[in-house]
Image 1 (cartoon, rainbow, N blue to C red):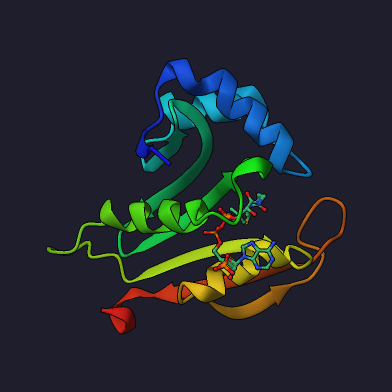
Image 2 (spheres, rainbow, N blue to C red):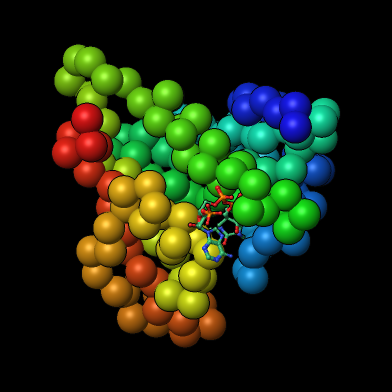
Length: 153
Ligand SMILES: CC(C)(COP(=O)(O)OP(=O)(O)OC[C@H]1O[C@@H](n2cnc3c(N)ncnc32)[C@H](O)[C@@H]1OP(=O)(O)O)[C@@H](O)C(=O)NCCC(=O)NCCS
């Protein structure tokens, strides 16, 4: 399958919002996604295009020595084809790896019931650090995970 991963553009916003609603229990508002494009100075928002159509994304932030995945998603019809993996790997290409701001850790929170995502992260070197009880508005626990890049290099 022909695919490419590139930075979010304004023309992608409607499609990304559709994916957001398909993939998340508490989807972000359109304006939240728009903020990532034009208002958030530390984030990077990657979109995955397959056969010319956006079918996934990875929105992450880099602050000093740490990166945080805010949201990653692949539409249902394109799952288990390796695209989540591609989005994680492409993210790491954006990490500075010299100078003072070398990214040492990647962190994230994931719903405790989200087995597909937890399995994806574990497969790619993320470890469970702690459970955050009742983290989500509906009361579900979050699992806080970290990938320590210095150990992976
Ligand atoms: C999590 C998500 C991004 C994974 O995307 P994906 O494209 O299916 O991931 P990949 O195909 O790269 O999967 C890589 C590995 O993750 C694990 N995995 C992915 N989906 C899985 C599932 N449903 N059950 C068990 N393991 C799973 C497997 O180890 C898989 O490797 P394998 O297919 O060789 O067995 C996708 O399921 C998704 O968009 N979910 C909804 C949004 C979401 O929950 N995002 C995470 C919020 S923190």
